[in-house]
Length: 401
Image 1 (tube, rainbow, N blue to C red):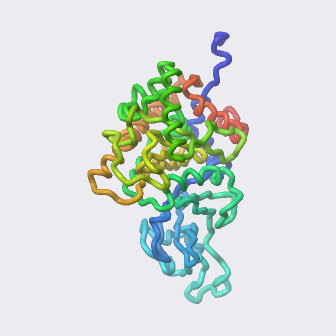
Image 2: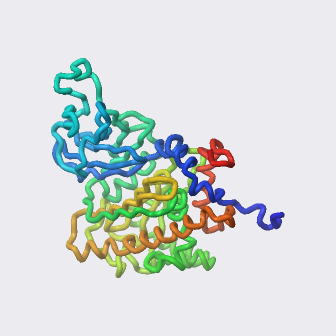
Image 3: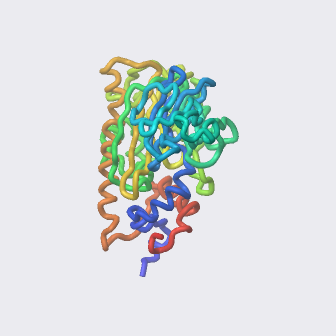
């Protein structure tokens, strides 16, 4: 029998939710395809026909810049026999010709040639397309829901775009990228990213930059409140936006969160020495010695500093692995030393996070595996668990089917 002191604590999901392939297959269709993914930045496309190839949930996709200026996303699978249309990761595609039987598609994905074999299909069939929106320079994609080119009535995105714009994402340039295959379920990766209870013992670089972590863990609330007030006052004097405290809305299928966090002491940004290594981003007038962090659903996360931004995209691969893509952006591309300095914090931290998540995944099939507990420092992870349960868990029985 469970001790009474434990009965009021929120439990984690049963361990098999993190390893069962039947669970993942149902998630893929019922929840994951309805979430936003960060797939590109506007600066990656300069000429009509420029494209980028991506893969989401085993769906091969071409992102292409159209004549009208929109980024269109359509399937990289031929309508004839299902062959891959291009293996290139990027380039320019005036038209698309299938390498198998040479069926040809125009810039809109319209089938324009079957080499005379099936003229009744020509100019009538199109490659399947997917929802994309361009918000503050970020190209976001959903596999299900909404219509192509939607730019309004997307409340979860509209709530974040003013902060992205203020911090200069529309005019930013990509200065570095990193991709890791983490051998852990996407929920483990997301829960890890939403809590900093593990930060002090596991993230020396992050703990150095973000002093509030140790203050909260040591329950030094007075010192934390003073550090936060100093940051808020500086930001207010500079005219920088400070969002009100936010939490995950478990009732929203696509949730959003953005919060403001103070940096340590006189630290200006997330570099090795805490000093600016690139020009100020967006409309900032000076470093306010803090930064904004947040998320758009479970897969898009961001940290906005004075001189750079870091975007994280999580892509579930299967029940026990997740691709983590990190993108660093600045107002302009600095020299190599400055790039290394700007990437120093999250180059190390994301590798550490990956290893921590894999430690959890290793134990999900143990006979000793039981649901765990969320502490008061894991509120966001607990809220994510409630969100998941509200939108998905009811469709899975105790055998994982």
